[in-house]
Amino acid sequence: MYGVCALPANGAHVALYLSELMSQGSSPAPVLSATYGISWAHRKALEPDPCQHPWVPQVCEAAKRLLGRPPVKKENLKVGHVQAIVDQFGYFGTSLADLQTVVIILVGFAGFLRWSDLSGIQVEGMQFHDTHMDIMLGKRKNDQYRKGSMIPIARTGSVYCPVSMMERFIARTNTSTGPLFQEIKIQVGNQKLSHNKLRYSSARSQVLRMFKAIGLEEKKFGLHSLRAGGASAASEAGIPERLISAHGGWKSESSRNGYIRDNKQTRVSVSKALGL
Image (cartoon, rainbow, N blue to C red; front, top):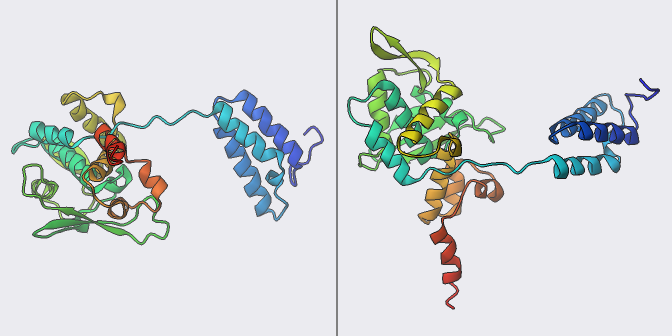
């Protein structure tokens, strides 16, 4: 079209095409996707990559600066929030659906787990000990070689103990294999597991319902508030950064620090330590 060769493409022509995409778009995503696609197609065809032309990265950078928006991160869940949820919904005799949601919140917070981690837990991957429980994760987001990892969570002995709450939940479901968290079905007036893995949308709506019940604004929190909240609480408690990274599965300081938000008291301690 227009007398322009598509493969191999001319770098200047690619830059002009990307500029047109940028003028029509409202985010840098179309520009970046087109760049990656063009580059991949040329490398696959063993042709010179036109995206190496100096104009192409300049257009991509311009798209990021002009059309990019800063990410809006969800607020962290606090220890007090978790305790309030357990007090309100974790009592003996609570519904199976509420008990499952309480376990999701406790384990997600204590284990610094993403939803992809939580949804991948299998009942047979749980091991219980006197001092803790081990959760075997077959894969994690940054586990490129699928080595898997074991997440230990302490048995605290309190009413907020993630381990004892997990034991209650597993005993209630009476299951020994399959996904730990499942969709709940109502059968003859009783709640039972459906044997279908719990969907993200279902888990999110149940978790947000409990957040709202304790006075939190739903739009400011999400499932990721569990992972970020647990990591931040550990940092405030003085846990070494190396252990926080190992527990949360972070490979770099920058990725870990993106989750940890220091409170005002911790920030004030920096200048206070100067001894002025």
